[in-house]
Length: 425
Ligand SMILES: NC(=O)c1ccc[n+]([C@@H]2O[C@H](COP(=O)([O-])OP(=O)(O)OC[C@H]3O[C@@H](n4cnc5c(N)ncnc54)[C@H](O)[C@@H]3O)[C@@H](O)[C@H]2O)c1
Image 1 (cartoon, rainbow, N blue to C red):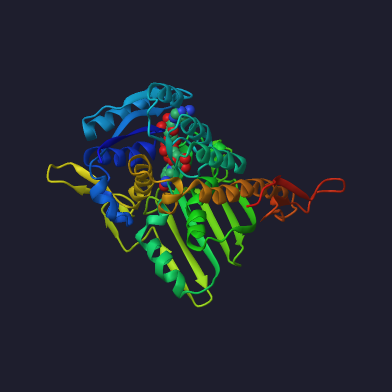
Image 2 (image 1 turned 90 degrees about the vertical axis):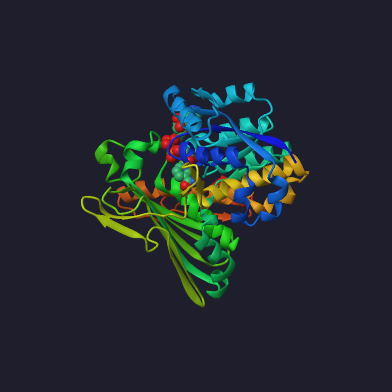
């Protein structure tokens, strides 16, 4: 089956400009078939081999960064995507490419929804960065529109494709028995919050990286949240005049009885040996699994360079005979699955339902968005009450009737139960 998948990338910063752009460059060079075996879809490798991929447009906030992204892409592929910049450059892209197949969204967290909805409305499929969005009502809007337009919204949840996590999902999970409790942590470098992101004050460490682990735990157990509590601290970034949380801790209780603590920060000093510190562990009724995603036993040090670790599983460069580098890893795998689903729909007559179990869907992402949304409200209330010496007693409940914030501090005449969402989770 010959044909082309035309992709536009909106947002080409630390992540879009690297992982998305390099993945699309390799697709443009060799197609999707070289990647399919990594994600268990090799049965489609022969029939998908002829499909071409083209990054037709790249858009960022400033013209300078758009030009940089365009140049990088040309260096990798000799092909030059059209560049766009400004407040809403995706609208110009959709006008210029009415036959766009895929809108890839790697804008800051709070700027996903508008791009996703515009892409869907124009008939494009979506590959979006996590979190899909930050508001549960927006998640519903995205899901409804995707259904109506018969389009895919694939969310980049690469932790699902880490080989260690696949082993836990498919094997270890059964050995350790009913899950009791667990911890999942992801600690980002200080550089991210103080220099890389211009949008830290519109986000927080849990909204930014917590979704990875929340999604993974949901992916393992398919159990919905029933309640949560959350707290956060502001001590380090405030020193640099940044009014954002340094760290957030969220405990989520799930319908299957397990309770998971999610710990996130973005203030790890540069002296730390790895790019990020991350891992998770789950205690079951019959055993325990520990999985350290940061230190996998690979470490080196040299004079003046400190002690260092690297995660070669996420993405790695593979030397080609022509001296260029191919790009592989579970960071690419999560983009591959969404694109494979899109190819099935465009070229092989598949429906959304036919391919729904091969990629992280918007429906699954909605659970993560519900947790992120409620945790944000609970955390802010608890933060204020802690300042007043009243403790952190605010929680959220999830159920068939929606999401309720439970605040015992409300005084007479005020509501202790505030419903923030009316539909079942
Ligand atoms: N999957 C992962 O492991 C992972 C890792 C890092 C970031 N992310 C996610 O990727 C997204 C981007 O993060 P990042 O680290 O690249 O951030 P970044 O700040 O480095 O890059 C953001 C990009 O969006 C562009 N942008 C901002 N406003 C825009 C607008 N109005 N129109 C068009 N482009 C606009 C910027 O110009 C920049 O290119 C976030 O949602 C983040 O959570 C995912």
